[in-house]
Length: 110
Image (cartoon, rainbow, N blue to C red; front, side, top):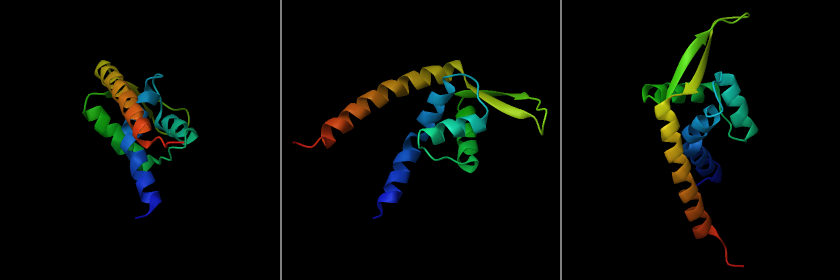
């Protein structure tokens, strides 16, 4: 088993949560989302992000609006819906509990 595969799966497992968390800051263009995720060392490409945004939108967690661009095609800006905000609050609580459990079970006796 390769450690890189496991690390990639761990990142993918939290990606939706991270996207929702980034969008909690406000309305964002996908390249801004990618930039913030890359800054956090969660490597994401457009081919990964757009299907996730579509799935989150279809689930009622996100909405978007089109904005005309001065250079190029119109841009789609995403933001959390009220349902998405509540969903994220639940994920925040679950993440805190999970992080504590993982820390407790992986702590080495020193």
